[in-house]
Image (cartoon, rainbow, N blue to C red):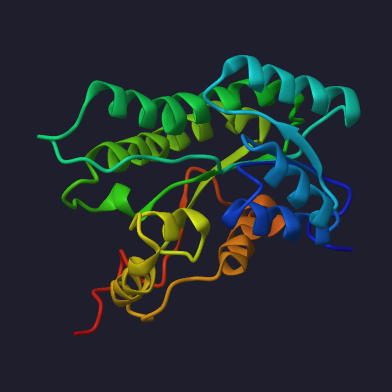
Amino acid sequence: MTDLDGKVALVTGGATGIGRATAALFAAEGARVFITGRRQAELDEAAAAIGATAIRGDIADLDDLDTVAARIAESAGRLDVLFANAGGGEFNTLTDLTPESFDRTFDTNVRGTTFTVQKMLPLMPDGSSIVLTGSTTASRGGPGGGTYSASKAAIRQFARVWAAELAPRRIRVNVLVPGPTDTPGLRGIPGDETHVDGFLAQMAASTPLRRVADPAEIAQAALFLAGDRSSYMTGSELFADGGEVQVFPAA
């Protein structure tokens, strides 16, 4: 028996990075896995490599979410694990922030995550598990990160509320908080390939462990929250951040 033997799981943003690593681990642990993403080619390649079912969809589009729910209902009939991982964001100072940038970040990270959970919930039997991807930025303040940080802080608070609301059904809701992780998203932040190595070194230096994570390490934490080994956890945050938030990095 493996941790998710016979379970049905959905990983949003499952084509790359943490989502892909987690979807692969869920499948290896016995789950029937569905993944979503916005780019069909990447999604199809990931699904083939993992042995998952791909459903193209943008979590900011409610019609897409309806399609995802309908496909899972038709194909599997239920959903035992939801890893609401898809997200993104833009970095602007207060002076530079535009309404359009603000809306894009909140539409994806807050509105998209909220309605992902709402629309998948009817498929979820009592005792299911919901894992939300948070961010260390929700616990810290840094120049340029206001909108993204606030969106992830909203996710943290929603987790508390949903945990309370869903407790009568024994559906657990927890937040996974990754530290800097070597993903295409992180590598894309500098905007110039020549700056990537320096940026990753800077990110590594922000953690006491002095390195960025491999996505597979974050996937292990997601598996813990998804399965019965965390059966007495709900409304919690699990930091897999190399000590970035809780421990001051060594000089």
